[in-house]
Image (cartoon, one colour):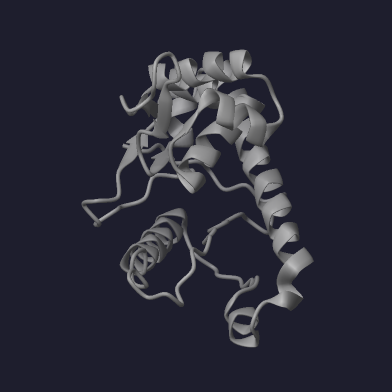
Length: 205
């Protein structure tokens, strides 16, 4: 799942930066879910994905081809006959809001995707809350939500975000080979508190 561009020092962790045209293709309920499912669950056929997401294989195939056209999914070449096996082409995607300025459709797509990601986070986290009590206490203590506040300039906030991304990158495979390790989703959400005090905007170079 997104979003804003972040440094990824791990050479095995691939990403793609989306322009306005690509963002408009991705901003679709089924395409967003198809990409997320392939990244989380691994390669699958259109039929498998249709069953998982409750749609039909024809529509799924069409939307996979649209995602393929912008470099987000690809055919593994391992399918049998006409049953193509699809996989996510990269581990992540990113975008800059400044890339969308002047393209009303792209800005609308960005807004929709951001809201869709929030809905996705809420849905996934509520699923965790539904089963949390069945997990060991050390996991329950380690996981969870937290919030804090900082007073900073846009440049300082960007640096903080980069440093957080670097921490996540260091931990990306730290549990590999350990049978006690589990995949954990890490979200970073930054937003201004004083919504009625927008500063003078700067231009990204």
